[in-house]
Image (cartoon, rainbow, N blue to C red; front, side, top):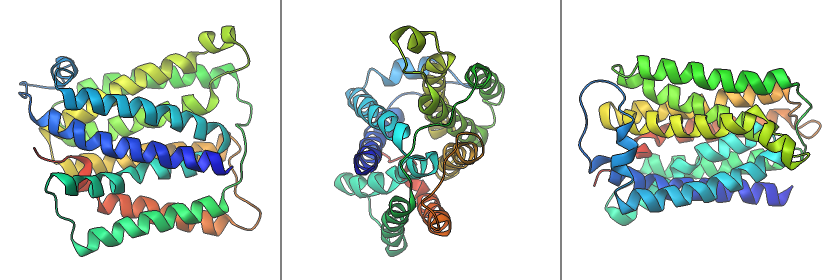
Length: 269
């Protein structure tokens, strides 16, 4: 299990540093009029910082997929929320300042992850039917339509982005790896790609159009709470016997501390 935890932490570090690079790049391009503009991704990918940040996202995503195969979703998703602590510390290099309460939040994130690591039980995913995999793809499409429809209400974009990232985690956890044919025939594979792209688009739009703190806080809630609940209720996620209370405390501490660091969802140029 230790290597699963290592991969989860690696994903958090990669995502956290990527956020700094991508946020600076996103702020350097012009904001379009109206709702969500898919051309935003084209514009930001012309910035070298966004390209490097995306490369780190790929590294983080691969590490996340490995962690999802052996750890409960509530551990992996809490670790991803902890990437905000990495972003906060990394932002010091470009002039950001952390107040005492934010340093305390960084410590709380680390403590929460330590509690989760101590309470987690290594396990694979409980079997789910094809209907669950199809439902992930359908939910991705529905959330995508809702995101475009709500594009003129900036605060909603962060939540929709978080829910898309939640679908990425659920699909990555349940995707079939029995054979090459089963892998490419699995609807969950396509849910990963589509939900990931839409999540990036909606989150970039939220950063440009609304409150950074609000957008990031809603994104963290969306990507942690929903998949963690589904993991426990439908995918067989459990803790070590007698350690359930420790997992709840660790999850609450990590997510609450991440919310306290929500302003680091974006770093100005």
